[in-house]
Length: 303
Ligand SMILES: NC(=O)c1ccc[n+]([C@@H]2O[C@H](COP(=O)([O-])OP(=O)(O)OC[C@H]3O[C@@H](n4cnc5c(N)ncnc54)[C@H](O)[C@@H]3O)[C@@H](O)[C@H]2O)c1
Image (cartoon, rainbow, N blue to C red):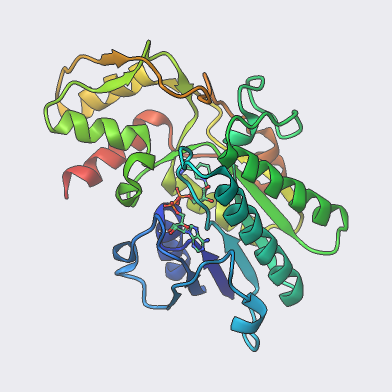
């Protein structure tokens, strides 16, 4: 099976392509290396195309190449990116381009959406509740979901949208300030500094381990029906609790330093309703927060 992965040089992409390769899939990667890094792909032996998906004529580029599946991950992922217009242009035009290319090639499309689309909506977050995007990043993902829904209504091809919650795990170090809070706090604490979080540390996130994402994508690749579903664990953990878990794994007892949140678009809590992912895709996260953070810490400590 031939798979095109956009954004394959990024955090999820680089984890996913190694897992797909080990299962015998033939992979081609497109990445502009905006936030990803070629070092993420040092063990990958397939074709890497360094191009911007929002400007590229995919039909011309791959005129004689066939793909069974396209996994679309390429996106501006820095939610604090200052140019809203460029955020929307890049993310939405890139998606339109991929959507059209998948149609021309008759390929299944599995794409990355986000829990950001729910904003401060009701908890647990359900796929059919009204989106409340709080920033341009979340709006771009909502616009992508709207475009996908229109295509899904036509029922003539398979599109799987995965609304990822808060992902952490190996491979995110190149994301800098956009890397997960688990990564940022680990680095502060390992350096012996008190972990710094927004007051009062009781904001909660549905943190999901990147190894679970590989499974969600595999389910997407094999899906025989279209859907847009949450990819979370169904459990939310506070930042105060994350610090306790990190202290435990690092053998430390560091106290939190709290500071005012400068952003007005933060969600107080994210928590996925996981029913549809299980029902439509047969996906259920395997790692709870303690298991995921332990696995992640042991890989970070080996570096
Ligand atoms: N990390 C999370 O917690 C999270 C949560 C929800 C959704 N998502 C979505 O999942 C996907 C993967 O996220 P990630 O954490 O791996 O981010 P990432 O920044 O590590 O990866 C995104 C990749 O896309 C590439 N890219 C960006 N714009 C591009 C363009 N126009 N053309 C080609 N390549 C381009 C980047 O260089 C990068 O390698 C993204 O679509 C993101 O929005 C991530």
